[in-house]
Image (cartoon, rainbow, N blue to C red):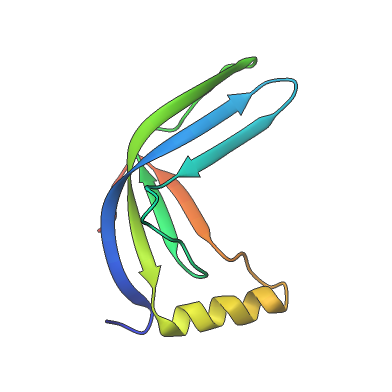
Length: 98
């Protein structure tokens, strides 16, 4: 276990996207047994999602979850306390993590 990254693994995920007059959102759902904590990173694999106006989509993809190590988790909590950073990081990419 490293101080920055404790574990890295791939998992299926589901993306719910809506682009309508009522809402513009994208929600990422991971399997129930996976808990995301401060400093964790999630990278979703696949092409960018384009949703025409007035529609919604549900897309199944694969994601790589990188669990924060103790140093990154502590830094993220401290930074969030002082409103310096987001608690979680999610990115979408067509490539894969190295």
